[in-house]
Image (tube, rainbow, N blue to C red; front, side, top):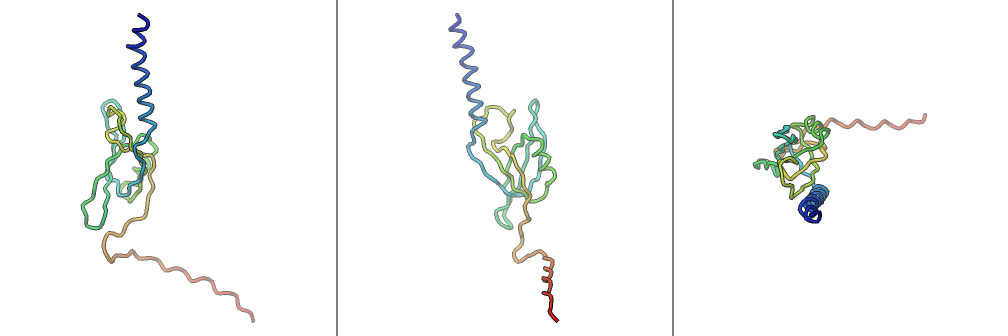
Amino acid sequence: MLKLMFWLLLVPIAVTAVYFTVVLKWNYSVGERAGWVQKLSRKGWLCKTWEGEMAMVSMPGAIPEKFLFTVHDPAVAESINQVMGKRVTLHYEEKVGLPTSCFGETRHFVNQVVQVSDLLLAPGYAPAVPPVPAPPAPPTKN
């Protein structure tokens, strides 16, 4: 009876725990994507996660591609909210094999955001650059 309970109860629990440990620690891919964050909202019935959408433009005039992502860390979500509408780079880890949406609605988990300078979106357009002050003149000898 004890052996049967071991095989029917403890082994499946141990296998499930090992599976979740491996899936949560292992990354299918790691990378960065640049664009403009359009949306970030906290969603979920029971398990609340931050779900976002970023528009990526490959070249001027092209239709933007949407990058859907999930954020677990509230501090990272706050950082993304502060740079909403500005050009950013999101560092993400892609995880596969998570069985429920409690971990997030996407496979891309953002863990860092960096604001970058804006791209020039029109050919021939250059932003005004303030003039560089001339270096001070060397002292003269009399």
